[in-house]
Length: 516
Image 1 (spheres, rainbow, N blue to C red):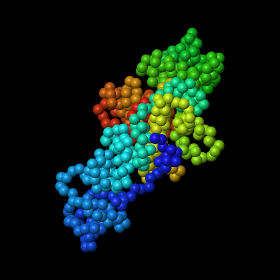
Image 2 (cartoon, rainbow, N blue to C red):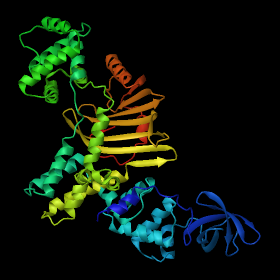
Image 3 (cartoon, rainbow, N blue to C red):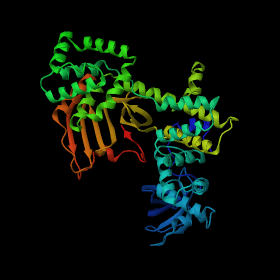
């Protein structure tokens, strides 16, 4: 079952505050004090409330009640709660007309644990979700809890989306699987458009420029402070074809100095690229592929030079492009100007909806995988925003090429909102969780206060070392370029606790290569 456009628009909206009690609800309460006229002060759902009782009861005792009226609150006694008596969920299910129904018992248990109204209609709705669930009781309850936390209505359509979202692998993996099933169809028409859209998303990357990296590389070559790095740069640049293999490092330095600055040298490199018939981006890729030939201790430094880019707009622009291509704002786009209709119809989500609703001939494997990807994208939409008062969390997962590394990039921001409704970039927190080939999982907690930035880096391995000071200074200078001040970096190894922010990371976030 798919969530239709109209339903999704309502799911993405904000829930109204839930009523604490509804008519017909079953609830347990303890009588604290009896007043004249069958009015009682009682403890109900963790609060002290005053209610009108339909029968005289005894103070100090606990009872099951049915809410017969909410304003003013009136309660009808069902039975006394005996000390040590269990199976409350079975009692609630039976009282609401579902005796000996396992799904109703599970639903009642969930409603009682979650402090949701245990009313007949609500119980029937949740019981249906337990019946259709492909998971066991604890996992189903966990999914329902996640839906509640994000104010996602407990409907069948939303539940099926969230269940599929939890079961699927990383988005990049699911997109690749879908692409492989399309290739088995000799695609034409809509299928061919979907194939092109998938290829566009999977190849989406942060646009790379060599202007600043080239200047940084040339400065490192000229500098006498790190002769070993200069030698490594000489080796890799000659191997890449940037420099004449017969030229010595001394001659290279003299030639660079004669140019006066990195910009002039960049012009020489541009001429070289033109002669070879390659772009700057292709040259960057070629250099990155040569990095494994360098000693491990120098590789990270050289790569940081190659990838140095202080543009404020490059990464946000790449993320926005991927968001549009995936169709994460598909429903909102449908409500915008008709001039944008063509772009909306070319997103992965839009094309998936069109293909699945068309008369295209498709295999069962393709249809199953297409629906999985559709559920994955819709699940990402449903979990993307979470607001509490003036604090907002944004969770965004997209496939991205970072240099030559393919990754699922998950971006999580948490902070107060500005008057325009945006997260305040002067005061916020960001979480990075990276799955690295050698260091394995590495967590980076970023805290920003008045554009003063501090880092906590945690790695579970016992041999996690301190970060070299020169790398910290490189980071400090890079942050200055985008108007942030680095106040400090704390490195924590195995046996130490993760940064506090990491513990509050929304779950589940499984199968992610890179989280930011």
